[in-house]
Structure formats: structure tokens, C-alpha cells
Image 1 (cartoon, rainbow, N blue to C red):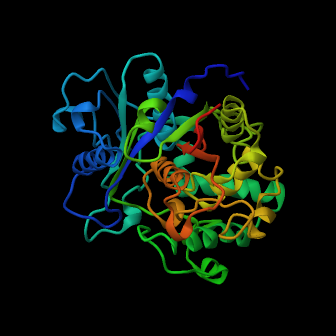
Image 2 (image 1 turned 45 degrees about the horizontal axis):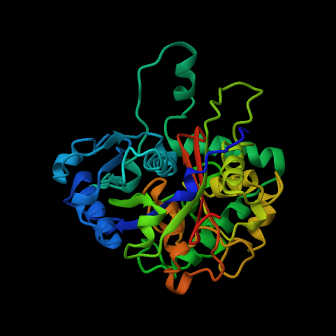
Image 3 (image 1 turned 90 degrees about the vertical axis):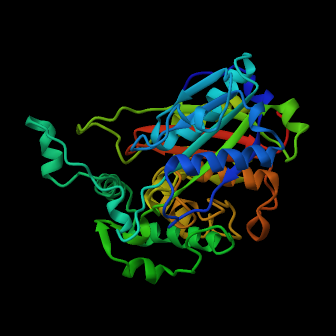
Length: 394
């Protein structure tokens, strides 16, 4: 772990949040959604679009949005403009780079956006992120011949390794799904609000052994945008500011070799340690956890790697009810990607903003002084972590 000494994060805050309608919303492009989300985020902050002088765009898997979004928004004289591709870790990275840019005078108000429109009317959701068959030769072709073509199959390998190493069970993964749905039932904007039981999880069809349908995230059309600015400016704007205390990135570069820790330890471990060190807090001071949950296993292993429970004890931890409403460690309080909506790292980040502002309504966690946010991209390849708070960093 590198020692983080830069204090810029204490001087920046998330001042605006824009979330479009989510789910089966047809007839609109990713760019359409992106424009709406940024417009909503600016209005949420009480800013005019003309006051935004920085734009960071996460283009998604299909690169449906790019730098031309500036022209679509009719933004003039931008001082910071870039696309960023860290897959599910992009949201956390964008906040980091926006904060660094603001601290160093590169921009004053930065919009960060992710938009996606994979769903097509009449086609099943699972086909939206289907594996792409690529021409490969030699050893590289073996993984595709073995069926490792899409994310569920690859995450299934990681989950199975965790099971074999630590005795994690399918029922314990199911506890994560049930908890996420319990939170989603209190979120009026969640796609899936109907309660589920552990029996429902166990009866759901197998997608890639050991991952069942209810172990897998949703597929959504929509967009989320945030506005990052200085803490001073944020405090003078419309919404309660969400101050950025700490951040970290970690990209393990796993290889398909026997000595790899793939599936056992993720980049959440070093990135979380760096974010906590920068924030100047300990893991047991975190009140709310908004974790990237593309699969139930991801929630479980991230809880371990951040240190909320010991390595290998994640299964027992989630099965205890700790992460569910009323539990000791409220986690993914909007329903996460499993039950609310799937906007890559913007899903956990948007809920972190809502909780830190105290605007969660029925699902609001009473104590929300420190919120940890995780992002995970690829198949445990890319990681980002944020620590945010409704209070300025002293």
C-alpha cells in the first residue's frame, strides 16, 4: 500500500446528482440519457450548464458516449474534457481525477457521467451483455473453448474458488440477494421491489454454476451523473454537499496461473486501505457501505477485503443479517445492482450521495457520517474506492 499524503480530497465535494428513469426505457440512446442526467445533476446543484467547465465521460462497453457529448450539451470553453474507461471502477476514478483537477486549478465544476442503453424491446436482457466470440489462437483460445466467454462464467470461477477455499455456500450468496431486495423494497426508484426469500434464490435457474439468476445483477437503460466542485462552492449551492475524504485504486493484473489469488483476494483490499489512509479513518468507523455488486459473490468478497469481516468469513457474516436492513453493517441500501439498477460504478456512488445527504427516505440509515463506495471492473481486474461524508474533512 502506498502512503497517501495529498490533501486535495478534503477540499472537494459532490454537489449535484442526476438519475434518469431506469430499466426497460426504450427508444432513447445512451447520449440521450447522458444529456438528461447531466442536466438533472446541474439543476440538482442549482447550477447552469454554462457553469460546468469540466466533463468526464465513461463511454461504457460499446463506447456509445464520447467527447462529442460536449457539443450535444452546447458546452463552450471546457477546461477539462476526457473519456475514462475503468469499466465498473470508472465512477470512483472520475471523482478522484475531478478532485485532483479542481485542487490544481484545471477546472472549477466537473460533471461525471455514465449512460447505457443495452436493452432492446423484444429481446431478453441476458443477450445485452453476451460474450463476444473473438478469434484466438493457441493457449488463449482454451478459455473460450471451455465456455469462459462472458462475465457470469468468469465470476462463477471466482465464486467457486472462494467456495472451495473457505466453505462458502450458495445459501450464503443467497443471503446477499435477499438483503439487497429488502433494501430495494424501500426504494421507489428500484427496478425490482418484490420481496424474495432464500428459497426463491435457491429455486432460481442456474446461470453459470454456482451462480443462479438471483445472484446476477440487472440490465438497465439509463444514466447517472454527478457534479464535483470545491467544498467551499458546494456549501453555497442547493444541496447538502457530500465531501470527498479519501480515494484509492488497485488493479491486480491477475494471470491465469496456479499461484494467482484470483477469486480469493481482490483489488478492493489495497484500494480500500489507501482510501481509508487518505481519509484518516479506520474501517470500523465506516457507517454505510455501497459496494459494487454485479454478482452476490462480489459483495461478499469485497466485505472481506475491506476488513468488515475476516478473510473467509464473508459467508457467515452476510448470512447473519449484518448487511440487511436493521443489521450492524448496512450495505447497498438502495438495492444495489442486484435489485435497484445497473449503471456500473454509478450505482453505488449515487446511493452513497443519497445516504450522505440524508435523503434516503424509508431506507435512510440513521448514522451516515462516513460512507465507503467500491467500484469493480472487468472480472476483478480494476478497482476503485471512495470514502465520502456529509462533513468537511478536518
